Length: 239
Image 1 (spheres, rainbow, N blue to C red):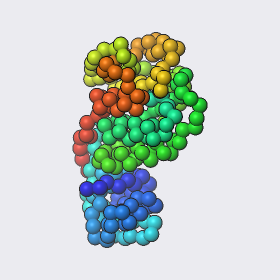
Image 2 (cartoon, helix red, strand yellow):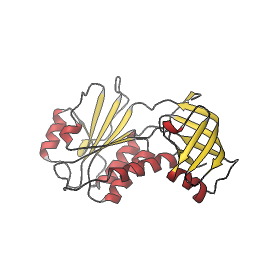
Image 3 (cartoon, rainbow, N blue to C red):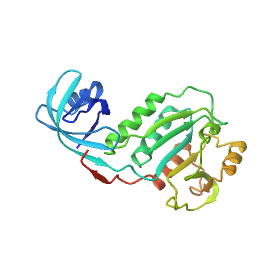
Image 4 (cartoon, helix red, strand yellow):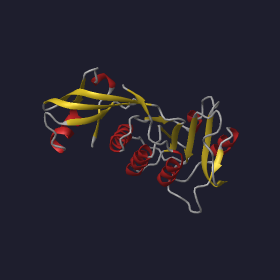
Protein backbone atom coordinates (compact mmCIF):
# COMPACT_ATOMS: atom_id res chain seq x y z
CA UNK A 1 0.00 0.00 0.00
CA UNK A 2 1.18 3.51 -0.78
CA UNK A 3 1.72 5.83 2.18
CA UNK A 4 0.79 9.51 2.19
CA UNK A 5 2.03 12.34 4.37
CA UNK A 6 -0.02 14.91 6.26
CA UNK A 7 1.57 17.27 8.81
CA UNK A 8 0.07 17.15 12.32
CA UNK A 9 -1.94 20.34 11.79
CA UNK A 10 -3.91 18.58 9.02
CA UNK A 11 -4.94 15.70 11.26
CA UNK A 12 -7.74 15.85 13.83
CA UNK A 13 -8.98 13.05 16.11
CA UNK A 14 -11.44 11.97 13.41
CA UNK A 15 -10.19 13.27 10.07
CA UNK A 16 -7.12 13.56 7.81
CA UNK A 17 -6.75 16.27 5.18
CA UNK A 18 -4.36 15.84 2.25
CA UNK A 19 -3.62 18.97 0.24
CA UNK A 20 -1.81 20.10 -2.93
CA UNK A 21 0.72 17.52 -4.22
CA UNK A 22 -0.43 14.74 -1.87
CA UNK A 23 -4.08 15.13 -2.88
CA UNK A 24 -3.12 15.40 -6.56
CA UNK A 25 -0.95 12.27 -6.36
CA UNK A 26 -3.80 10.32 -4.78
CA UNK A 27 -6.36 11.44 -7.35
CA UNK A 28 -4.41 11.77 -10.60
CA UNK A 29 -1.57 9.25 -10.26
CA UNK A 30 -2.99 6.51 -8.04
CA UNK A 31 -6.59 7.05 -9.19
CA UNK A 32 -7.99 6.89 -5.66
CA UNK A 33 -11.71 7.48 -5.25
CA UNK A 34 -14.28 8.05 -2.53
CA UNK A 35 -14.77 4.95 -0.38
CA UNK A 36 -11.20 3.69 -0.77
CA UNK A 37 -8.77 3.28 2.11
CA UNK A 38 -5.46 5.15 2.40
CA UNK A 39 -2.45 4.89 4.70
CA UNK A 40 -1.12 8.17 6.13
CA UNK A 41 1.68 9.22 8.48
CA UNK A 42 2.30 12.55 10.17
CA UNK A 43 6.08 11.99 10.21
CA UNK A 44 6.00 12.19 14.02
CA UNK A 45 5.53 8.49 14.76
CA UNK A 46 1.82 8.15 14.05
CA UNK A 47 0.27 6.11 11.24
CA UNK A 48 -3.39 6.21 10.21
CA UNK A 49 -5.75 4.09 8.15
CA UNK A 50 -8.31 6.36 6.59
CA UNK A 51 -11.40 6.13 4.41
CA UNK A 52 -11.73 8.74 1.65
CA UNK A 53 -14.88 10.80 2.18
CA UNK A 54 -14.24 13.79 -0.11
CA UNK A 55 -12.00 14.54 -3.09
CA UNK A 56 -11.55 18.01 -4.57
CA UNK A 57 -9.05 19.55 -6.98
CA UNK A 58 -6.64 20.51 -4.19
CA UNK A 59 -7.91 18.63 -1.17
CA UNK A 60 -8.72 15.13 -0.03
CA UNK A 61 -10.50 14.34 3.22
CA UNK A 62 -10.56 10.94 4.89
CA UNK A 63 -12.15 9.74 8.09
CA UNK A 64 -9.81 7.91 10.47
CA UNK A 65 -10.63 4.23 10.83
CA UNK A 66 -7.72 3.33 13.10
CA UNK A 67 -4.38 4.72 14.19
CA UNK A 68 -1.15 3.44 15.64
CA UNK A 69 1.68 5.08 17.54
CA UNK A 70 5.29 3.89 17.07
CA UNK A 71 8.23 4.26 19.41
CA UNK A 72 10.98 6.63 18.34
CA UNK A 73 13.98 4.55 17.17
CA UNK A 74 17.02 4.64 19.45
CA UNK A 75 19.81 5.50 19.29
CA UNK A 76 19.32 8.55 17.08
CA UNK A 77 21.35 8.09 13.88
CA UNK A 78 22.59 11.33 12.33
CA UNK A 79 24.23 11.37 8.91
CA UNK A 80 26.67 14.29 8.76
CA UNK A 81 27.81 14.78 5.18
CA UNK A 82 30.07 17.38 3.62
CA UNK A 83 28.19 19.16 0.84
CA UNK A 84 28.83 18.00 -2.71
CA UNK A 85 28.13 20.24 -5.66
CA UNK A 86 26.26 17.75 -7.85
CA UNK A 87 22.68 18.11 -6.72
CA UNK A 88 21.42 14.74 -7.94
CA UNK A 89 24.11 12.86 -6.01
CA UNK A 90 23.41 14.81 -2.83
CA UNK A 91 19.67 14.17 -3.07
CA UNK A 92 20.32 10.50 -3.86
CA UNK A 93 22.43 10.12 -0.71
CA UNK A 94 19.75 11.78 1.45
CA UNK A 95 17.04 9.61 -0.11
CA UNK A 96 18.88 6.33 0.47
CA UNK A 97 19.97 7.29 3.98
CA UNK A 98 16.31 7.87 4.83
CA UNK A 99 15.31 4.48 3.42
CA UNK A 100 18.07 2.88 5.52
CA UNK A 101 16.87 4.29 8.85
CA UNK A 102 18.80 7.51 9.44
CA UNK A 103 16.88 9.83 11.79
CA UNK A 104 18.59 13.13 11.00
CA UNK A 105 20.56 14.51 8.05
CA UNK A 106 23.08 17.29 8.68
CA UNK A 107 24.90 18.78 5.70
CA UNK A 108 27.91 21.01 6.21
CA UNK A 109 30.19 23.27 4.21
CA UNK A 110 33.59 21.61 4.60
CA UNK A 111 36.98 23.20 3.99
CA UNK A 112 37.11 21.41 0.62
CA UNK A 113 33.52 22.17 -0.37
CA UNK A 114 33.24 24.30 -3.51
CA UNK A 115 31.15 27.45 -2.89
CA UNK A 116 27.53 27.01 -4.01
CA UNK A 117 24.00 27.44 -2.72
CA UNK A 118 22.38 24.17 -1.69
CA UNK A 119 18.67 23.68 -2.44
CA UNK A 120 17.54 22.48 0.97
CA UNK A 121 13.94 22.24 -0.24
CA UNK A 122 14.95 19.66 -2.85
CA UNK A 123 16.83 17.60 -0.28
CA UNK A 124 13.82 17.76 2.05
CA UNK A 125 11.54 16.66 -0.81
CA UNK A 126 13.79 13.65 -1.49
CA UNK A 127 13.74 12.74 2.20
CA UNK A 128 9.94 13.06 2.40
CA UNK A 129 9.47 10.89 -0.68
CA UNK A 130 11.82 8.24 0.74
CA UNK A 131 10.01 8.23 4.09
CA UNK A 132 6.68 7.57 2.37
CA UNK A 133 8.08 4.95 0.01
CA UNK A 134 9.82 2.98 2.77
CA UNK A 135 6.76 3.17 5.07
CA UNK A 136 8.70 4.97 7.79
CA UNK A 137 6.70 7.01 10.30
CA UNK A 138 9.39 9.45 11.46
CA UNK A 139 10.49 12.16 9.03
CA UNK A 140 14.23 12.89 9.30
CA UNK A 141 15.12 16.51 9.98
CA UNK A 142 17.42 18.17 7.41
CA UNK A 143 19.79 20.96 8.45
CA UNK A 144 22.71 22.76 6.80
CA UNK A 145 25.71 24.03 8.79
CA UNK A 146 28.23 26.63 7.70
CA UNK A 147 31.16 24.45 8.75
CA UNK A 148 32.15 21.25 10.52
CA UNK A 149 33.04 23.49 13.46
CA UNK A 150 29.41 24.60 13.74
CA UNK A 151 28.16 21.03 13.37
CA UNK A 152 30.39 19.82 16.22
CA UNK A 153 29.53 22.72 18.52
CA UNK A 154 27.43 20.64 20.94
CA UNK A 155 27.67 18.62 24.12
CA UNK A 156 29.07 15.19 23.26
CA UNK A 157 27.83 13.45 26.38
CA UNK A 158 26.08 10.21 25.28
CA UNK A 159 27.06 10.85 21.62
CA UNK A 160 29.22 8.45 19.62
CA UNK A 161 31.14 10.19 16.83
CA UNK A 162 32.18 7.98 13.89
CA UNK A 163 34.46 9.23 11.13
CA UNK A 164 34.78 7.35 7.83
CA UNK A 165 38.52 6.90 7.31
CA UNK A 166 40.55 4.46 5.20
CA UNK A 167 42.84 3.70 8.15
CA UNK A 168 40.12 3.18 10.71
CA UNK A 169 38.72 0.17 12.52
CA UNK A 170 36.73 -2.56 10.77
CA UNK A 171 33.82 -2.49 13.23
CA UNK A 172 32.20 -0.08 15.68
CA UNK A 173 29.61 -1.09 18.30
CA UNK A 174 27.00 1.66 18.48
CA UNK A 175 25.01 -0.09 21.22
CA UNK A 176 27.42 0.83 23.98
CA UNK A 177 26.06 1.62 27.43
CA UNK A 178 24.81 5.19 27.64
CA UNK A 179 24.99 5.97 23.89
CA UNK A 180 21.82 7.76 22.78
CA UNK A 181 23.04 9.47 19.62
CA UNK A 182 25.36 8.43 16.78
CA UNK A 183 26.94 10.96 14.42
CA UNK A 184 28.39 9.54 11.17
CA UNK A 185 30.85 11.96 9.55
CA UNK A 186 31.38 11.78 5.78
CA UNK A 187 33.68 14.21 4.01
CA UNK A 188 32.87 15.94 0.69
CA UNK A 189 34.60 15.39 -2.64
CA UNK A 190 38.28 15.76 -1.85
CA UNK A 191 37.74 14.56 1.70
CA UNK A 192 38.15 16.43 4.95
CA UNK A 193 41.05 18.80 5.50
CA UNK A 194 43.85 18.10 7.97
CA UNK A 195 42.35 20.78 10.20
CA UNK A 196 38.97 19.06 10.20
CA UNK A 197 40.54 15.64 10.85
CA UNK A 198 42.44 17.10 13.80
CA UNK A 199 39.17 18.53 15.13
CA UNK A 200 37.52 15.10 14.95
CA UNK A 201 40.50 13.56 16.70
CA UNK A 202 40.19 16.17 19.46
CA UNK A 203 36.48 15.21 19.78
CA UNK A 204 37.53 11.54 20.24
CA UNK A 205 35.90 10.42 17.02
CA UNK A 206 36.16 6.72 16.24
CA UNK A 207 37.61 6.09 12.78
CA UNK A 208 35.89 3.42 10.67
CA UNK A 209 37.11 1.97 7.39
CA UNK A 210 34.55 1.33 4.66
CA UNK A 211 36.72 -1.00 2.60
CA UNK A 212 39.80 -1.09 0.43
CA UNK A 213 38.66 1.34 -2.25
CA UNK A 214 38.23 5.08 -2.27
CA UNK A 215 34.50 5.85 -2.35
CA UNK A 216 32.45 8.75 -3.61
CA UNK A 217 30.91 10.77 -0.80
CA UNK A 218 27.39 9.54 -1.51
CA UNK A 219 28.54 5.90 -1.62
CA UNK A 220 30.25 6.29 1.77
CA UNK A 221 27.09 7.90 3.16
CA UNK A 222 24.96 4.99 1.96
CA UNK A 223 27.37 2.41 3.37
CA UNK A 224 27.45 4.10 6.77
CA UNK A 225 23.66 4.37 6.78
CA UNK A 226 23.34 0.69 5.91
CA UNK A 227 25.68 -0.27 8.76
CA UNK A 228 24.08 1.81 11.48
CA UNK A 229 20.59 2.85 10.35
CA UNK A 230 17.71 2.01 12.67
CA UNK A 231 15.37 -0.90 12.03
CA UNK A 232 11.60 -0.51 11.71
CA UNK A 233 10.03 1.30 14.63
CA UNK A 234 8.15 -0.83 17.16
CA UNK A 235 4.45 -0.23 17.83
CA UNK A 236 3.59 1.63 21.00
CA UNK A 237 -0.19 1.62 20.86
CA UNK A 238 -3.10 3.68 19.57
CA UNK A 239 -2.23 7.20 18.43
